[in-house]
Image (cartoon, rainbow, N blue to C red; front, side, top):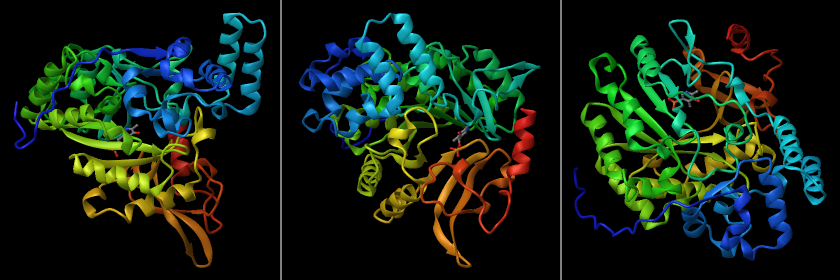
Length: 448
Ligand SMILES: *Cc1c(COP(=O)(O)O)cnc(C)c1O
């Protein structure tokens, strides 16, 4: 393996992975300090929304002196206001009286169904086919990039309270995933227009290296020369950095990444990073150093969230820290219209202001970041700003990605709306009836 010069290598003591889920809330030592009624609230919410946190996250990343406001606490522990007041009350009442597990399960299922569990038509649209068979473990929405959801990677080292894939982590919701490397390879071999494979989850880094290699190693064969880039979406860099240092197959993982890089692939770790505090620990910085020594790039992305990072200074310092550690700022997302959105949502106007005020503070090296971006049905739509055109106050928007590539980078305008938090709240500006892409998008939705 290549060595980075002049970097002192810290000694990292291995840590055993220990995880707590909703039935083990009472076993978390640090939580014993929080008031009883708050612990009860957490249990109520954890019956509906996913909860899973590992001991590294709550010992090293959360500042317990600052609970409940600590951003990493908000990021991983359930909060009362994540549920609608009436939904919260129903579950709290049920739990306070005599109840059976089945009753809790049934109510939870009902409440989840009211929280838009499958946003942007992700269960129905974008599922590709090979030789007439649907491939439920893949999504192919944008021409260049195929998403792959390996079956063994459909959970995470800890769950984020705002996850837009939350529904697959609770109850018996249908997941889309695949354990069929063969199907993946067949599809990619037949689609020469695809340049990027994005392996996602859950978190593919929960998988053993052997499994990951089973999907990825084959892509070094000549029939996959068109696959130039392999991206792996993960939160493990900050939620379980030991994956790259002391886990039994950590070195095998780095070797695998190195083989892909040496074989000519651009390998990008798409790190989900919500707050600069996640990057503070020595073990995280050592994971970054080891990963970078393999020749992979690390790009960073995250949604903007109330209670966690709705502050321009937080973003500016996060991007600066990323650049300092050799990471590349990539996307700022708008929180999607699903799950606990009510708790985390920020109006589009404010989202744009935070982006702008953060962007203004950093040099061009950190301005590789794009956003704020909404991953909506028609594509990724960036809020470019609020402005006035011919006396009308409007949002200026553009597609960063489009279901039709021709939509990309075309500016369009929506009526100013101070309360809008998502694309579907917006109406065309200048008295127009429809956005330019709407007819075509309706036809695509009907066909899918
Ligand atoms: C964001 C996204 C991609 C990748 O888009 P890039 O702009 O290339 O990062 C691919 N597919 C889907 C469904 C996405 O949401």
